[in-house]
Structures are given as structure tokens and as C-alpha cells.
Image (cartoon, rainbow, N blue to C red; front, side):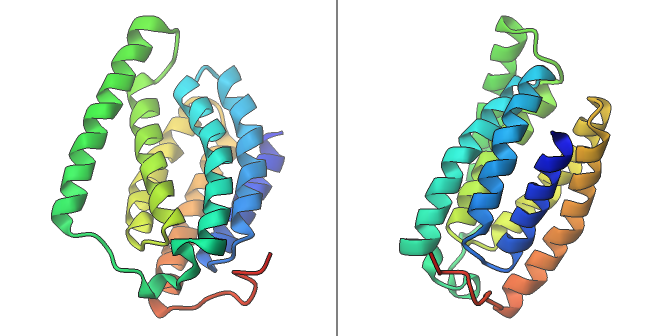
Length: 188
């Protein structure tokens, strides 16, 4: 199951880097599989994250078809560094609260890494639905942490996937900066 989820995850990121709306379908399939896998690995925040990603895939599809995501990424205005600093601070407080709840009420493993990567991943995915370039900066950091988290939890293939993600993120940053838009990005 992990290998199938990885294949769909790679397709997702490749299509997202090319601004293709089809990325959201591939992402939904991958996340549905990972929901099951993460729950059984006692990474409950990660399982919840994957489940939420399925819903965010529908939202992302809609945004890229009819919302803010219709515009090429190069044309989307970004947020100020003050806005990002405020967001990072608020998200850190939320992640600490999630970690505390997991420590107190569950048998979850790696609660701090699980909580922080989950909270920031949701935020970075929201940025992606809006086609904001800053999403890729967040993903560089988040996915680097995921390499370690998945490796220590025994998901070596998924850890390798996230190493590949880091390379694909660099490709996405380059592709979005130059304004390349895939020909099928807004077709239904």
C-alpha cells in the first residue's frame, strides 16, 4: 500500500509543480491510502492530516478551477514577512497545544514532530490552494523534517519519497518563478 501511495504522491507533486489541476486528484488518492497507514503507525495527527488532505484536494481542485488558483502562480501576490512571522507564531502555539493533547490523552508516538509537521502542512497546503509561491519555502522545511520522522517510524520508502519531494520542490520553485503553466492545468 505504501508503494501505491508513493506513486500517487509523486504524480501529485509533479503535477502541482506544473500547475495542473489534476494534482488534486492524485493527491486525494495518495492521502486516502496514507490515512490508513499513519493511523496504524500511531501517528494520529498525521492520519488526521492525511484525511483532511482528501478534503483539501476537493477544495484545491475547486480553487484552481473557479477560484484564486485560476491565475498563474507568477501573477499571485504574496504576503509580507510580518504576515508570515505572525502565522508561524500562531501555528507554533497550535502545534504545541496539539502535542500536549496527544501526550495527555493518547498513546501517540513522536507527538512533537507529528504535531508540528501536521499543523504547518495544513497551512502550506492552504497556501498551495491559493497558488502562493511561499508554499514551497514551507514545504522545503516541512518535508526535510518528514524525511527523519518517517525514517524513524519504519516508513523507509516514504522517507525516500520526501527526499525526492525536496528535489521536486526546488523544481516547482523554479517552474513557478518562470511562470510556466501546464497546458491542461485548468481543464476539467
